Image 1 (cartoon, rainbow, N blue to C red):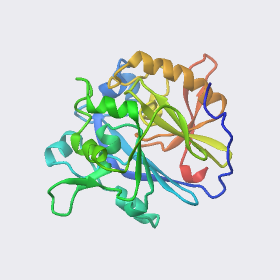
Image 2: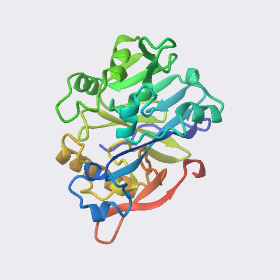
Image 3: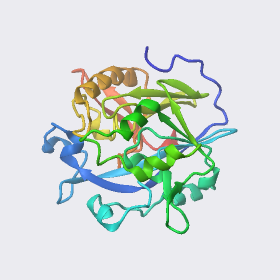
Image 4: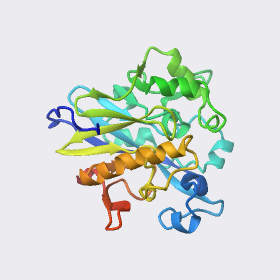
Amino acid sequence: MLPGSCICYLAANMKLYSINTGKFRLDGGAMFGVVPKPLWEKTNPCDEKNRIDMAMRCLLIEDDTRLILVDNGIGHKYNEKFAGLYAVDHGVTLDKSLEALGFSREDITDVILTHLHFDHCGGSTEWDKVGEKFVLAFPNAIYWVQKSHLNWALNPNARETASFFDENIQPLVASTNLRLLEGETELFPNIELLVVNGHTEGQQLPLISWKGKKILFAADLFPTYGHLPLPYVMGYDTRPLLTLSEREKYLPWLAENEVILFYEHDPYHEAGLVVKDDRGRFGSGETFLLKDI
C-alpha cells in the first residue's frame, strides 16, 4: 500500500522551514551512475575535478510541542584535508540558519536521521568544549534511526565504509537519546516515515502532511532535481536495481498525487513537483521555495 492512507490530523499550527547547512561537492559520475556526462551536466554542471555542487538542506518542523530537525549536514569536526577533498563550504551554517529563525540547537526536541552517511548526520555530534571527546550536538533531542540501518552502519560493507564515521555514530549509540524504529510508521501526527533500501539499508524518508499537501523529504532516493528520470540512479547506491524498483513504485504516485519533493542535495532547486510526459517519462515539473507554498 502506498503512503498517505492514515488519518490526517489538522496541522494548522505546524510550520516548516528550510535549513541551509552549507555545501560540498561529489564526483558527478558517481552521483549519476551509468548516465552519460553530456546528459547529467545539463542540470548539474561540474568543476574541473568533475565534482558537482551538493546542498546540505535540512528541514525544520515546528508544531505546538516539538521542534523536529530532519538530518543535519556534515557538521564541523573535520580537518582541512577532508574539507578540501569534498570542497566543503560553510558560508551558511546550521547554527546561523537556526538563529535566523529565533532558535538554537538546544531547542531541538527530535532529530530524524534519514541515514548515517556523513553528509546527513555529521552535525549530530561535535567536540566537547576542551576538544577531548565527541558529544551530542543536540543535547535535549531524541534521535530517531531505523534499527536495520544502525546495524548496517555498525558493520559497513566495502562500498560504504568511507561514508560511516565512528565519531558520528558511536556517541549516539552510547547515549540515552537514541531511539530505534522498525519499519514504516507514523512517528508523529502528520509525519509518516517511509523506508527504502536501495541506496542503503533502512533509509527513512519523512512524508509530511501540511496545508492540505504532501511533502516528501527526498534524501538520497531523489537527491536532486536532475535525478528524477527513472534510470538516473547514483553509483553510490548499494543495490541499484532495488533503487530502480523503489523509484518505479514512487514516481507514478508522486506525479498522480502532486506530492511535493523537498530536495536535500539540489543546490539550485529547493522543492518541486514530478510530472510524466506523453511518452511516459518522469521529470521535474514546477519548482519553488518551501516558504512560497
